Length: 306
Image (cartoon, rainbow, N blue to C red; front, top):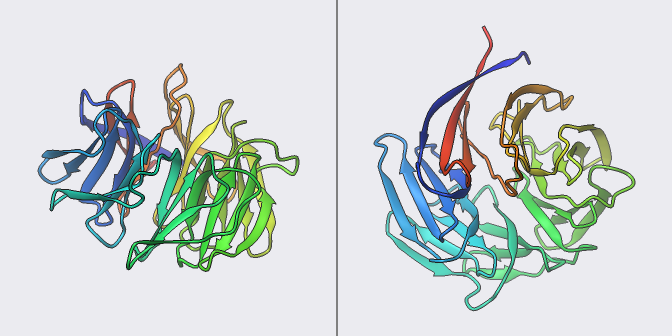
């Protein structure tokens, strides 16, 4: 892979304090969650935005679009998991009345299961449909920070507060607990994602390190210090030929998936921005980068350098 040219496109959702964003599976709409409890849905073709008051007065830190349905999972601090159907303008709570501190969510590829992790619990919360019933998963060694389904839907991965990478099968049986980014562990793991082929897992920790694992061989392929501050989000592009990494200062890096070398960087802020969940377009070389401080979503094109 050669270098990439980063081209800023017109930003969207100006004036909104955005925490997270996610594209619909067809790439036609972008969902973004706000500090005041709304989910905004942007239509890429028309530029129209619809506002959905999901949890007014509560920050929504997580937003994930179902890959097979017109359904968005969203949640945040002290909130239950909420499913929003944007075009029907209706929603429902999965765990009504539960006060949770969800930090991450991931849909299975067929949209049949929604996995969430709560920073105060050792077990992932996995909802399966029908009939939207929770499945019991074995406990990890410490509370979980981030979660991701494999592309075949047969394995679930999460990273924990003490830096372990944990995997489960679909029956909830814990398979492995590996040191996510370092044999010494100890570094909390805020980010995890599977490569689309299912052959590799990427993990990031609070020290700014990123590591690649072969989960079947239980072998670390490589690791690299890519930032001086915490890694807060990781996502592979749809073909798996780039790894997108965001850090606590708002910088977004495009990494080579084999070597973790830096292909391109989109500079961030000088101050700590906390969670920054970047949305990778499912088919085009587009990134949607939310910002609570700039109060918008930046749209960036990544093109090979001529």
